Amino acid sequence: MTLRFGLLGAGRIGKVHAGAIRNDNNATLVAVADAVPAAAEAIAREHGCDIRSIETIADSPDIDAVVICTPTDTHADLIELFARKGKAVFCEKPIDLSLQRVKDCLKVVEETGAVLMVGFNRRFDPDFMAVKGAIDQGTIGTVEMVTIASRDPGAPPMDYIRRSGGIFRDMTIHDFDMARWLLGEEPETVMAQASVLTDPAIGEAGDYDSVNVILRTASGRQAIITNSRRATYGYDQRIEVLGSRGAVAAENHREANIEIATAQGFTRPPLLNFFMTRYVAAYANEIAAFVRAVREGGSTPTTGEDGLRALALADAALKSVQEGRAVRVSEILA
Image 1 (spheres, rainbow, N blue to C red):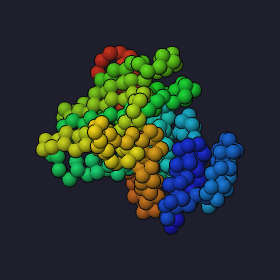
Image 2: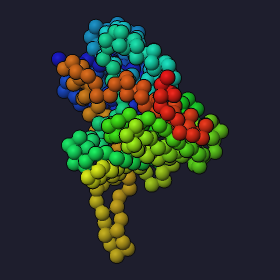
Image 3: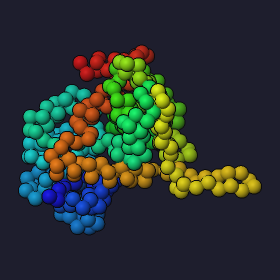
Image 4: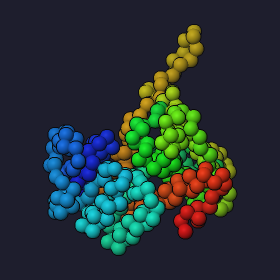
């Protein structure tokens, strides 16, 4: 069975997912919807699909699944709409910025029996999958500490920052999901520090641009996350996992994996500078995983519960900053 897709949102991430669908032999893009006609037209021209409204896609018998790439404040409503219409749903993170709204949405998903996958693409990066594989195979023994460095080359536009929900819900949420995945246990407490070091306008918008977080599980395993909105040297994405028998690490990706040696010293090409180039394979792999789960009737590898848990950690981190204390995740989920 070829899975027939409707794409909701034709912005930059929508374009990435459209390409991933095109390159999957078990999937096809049937229609695209976007509030900006020119954006939808560009996708339709490139991929040979229809332009339809969201309402039409919801009622289209020739569409089995949708990819939701619309603004965050539409995600929960759209998940509920398509769940009730019997469509499988892939939704970019987060489901919503409100934990209660996410809980309400997931109740609808459960009641309808809909397939839902939340887009935490980093789990599908080949290097990070190899790190997870080394953990699962017991190569490094029992996980003790996870260290994640995730730094952007520069901040997004201010209008985006104002509606993003803040750095913890927008940026660190990816790292919260990675930490849960690699620790193998749910974090029990969250301690965070946050500052405005790169641009005063970010602080004026009520957000932070530089944060550090420590997660601790009930058994004492720890994850340390460091984020910055300004890494002048490129898109910095590194992970190290320390275990009882060794360690495994994934390093940055560069424009070329070479080193040049001359009389002036050793040089290497710069880092990749954008998430859509760094994570090309990850985006393709996650769509393939979604297609496989729907076609084979299995569970999706990243679920609505994963989305809920990552958002709870983000809320706990913000509360930790505001109150200057370690916050128990149970306080947030209560």
